[in-house]
Image (cartoon, rainbow, N blue to C red; front, side):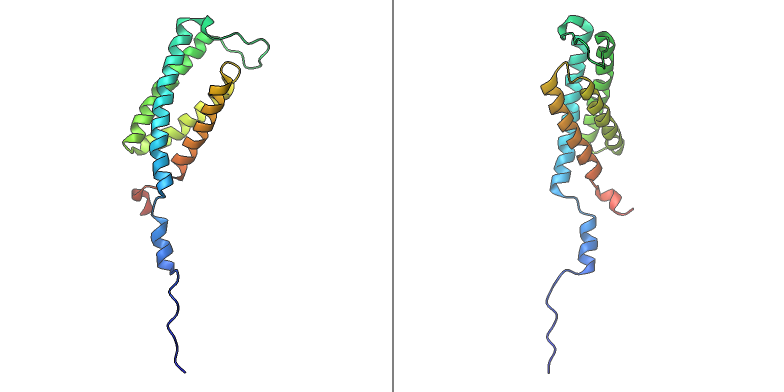
Length: 149
């Protein structure tokens, strides 16, 4: 009776090599996150400038729980926009600080867009979805330099 060689199958060392690899979806998602943060930051800068220039540019909301002075909100949007745009540029250069700051900025943006819902509902919902994608992309990405850790 002769023994036949075992059928080729997955070996444990094959799985170990796969752990350090980055999915193309995740790597592409990181670039997408950088672009989204850059564009969202620029748009927040423009929204902030328009809110600072004229309080009447946005419609007044009656009995909304989260009412804000639009001039103050304009300054908030302007500052958040500058930080988000800088973070987006950092993500496009694959800077580690930008990855950490990007998650934080996407969380801040998600909360800000929730508060912005009555003023611009459609854009706020789209922005909330994009922010959720950015958070996922930045937390799911595993760069090759972290594989050795």
